[in-house]
Image 1 (cartoon, rainbow, N blue to C red):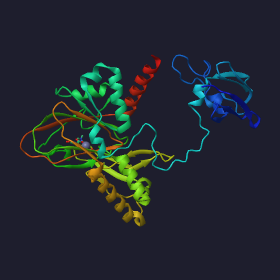
Image 2: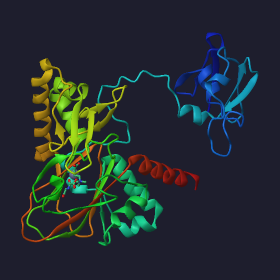
Image 3: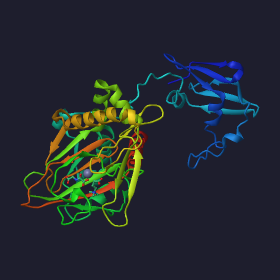
Image 4: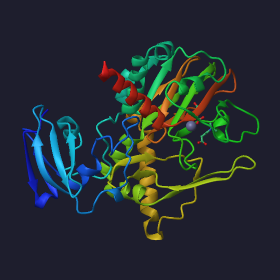
Length: 381
Ligand code: NM2
Ligand code: OGA
Ligand code: ZN
């Protein structure tokens, strides 16, 4: 990768660089702000030492040179500052394009799936990922890609799932505890603690910020039923959008309400859409949970019927077998879901036998950070 040619544009307000097959413009201000020298960024931690106010508002590029290795050197006025940018660094940060992204888009790291994933459920072994960093990277990469993965060979001592979370990040403690037992109880504070079936859902939509990962580990399972189901909420959203753009608009444009007040001293509420888009239309999160859905008060009267039709259709698509991956957890097995994307369900189970799961929450930022660090280490070798 090399810069082949550089041309100053617009009286130094920008430069146009040619990388051979592709050219791209960069603003003088952008380049100055992102200079890589030791006065601009700390060599010890890479953090920026300057603020935007340290950059003269009239910053221009007055000169460009391409050094023998193909990297770019520029001179900024009025500072008379020289800065060097590796060609590869620039090429990886091109912003001179008009991406014609349709609302609901996702980046290249995400692959949507349906029932066909059943044939190759991403699965790793606990001992392997605990002992081998690149095996851990493989498991984490599957979670980034599919929002779901299984782990086998997990010791069934109580609380072990926290050790799994600690392999890549941090447990998110909530009112349910650092981790929680999921089994049928008398006077349960949550319907999860019964033998009832649970419609596919994301957990804790009544919390803001929502926990972005959930782990569910199986310690015992001798009941009839109790199978687990996972569904890619991003695939469901895409299907809804294709068949009914107005329905997609309803669920992404208007906020839903969620609440939980099942135990004394806890009254959690959140106001968020079922399909959350970023300001640039990126699909950010799905929130779907019949047990915690609160009365909708942010959908205008005129839109309520269409909203409910879209909500119903979303639920139908979630229940479509063509969208579902099903399995029955055995002791020593665990699954993890991206709780902003993948819905999980369980079938009802019998009163005879024993079913004991443990769950905990964690967050995706830690997982993605550990994965990126593992990938970075791999490149340094
Ligand atoms: N539990 C298992 O989000 C939910 O309310 C689902 C959560 C109680 C921690 C159940
Ligand atoms: C939960 C849940 C599923 C199960 O605890 O959040 O969805 O299989 N449990 O018990
Ligand atoms: Zn759940």
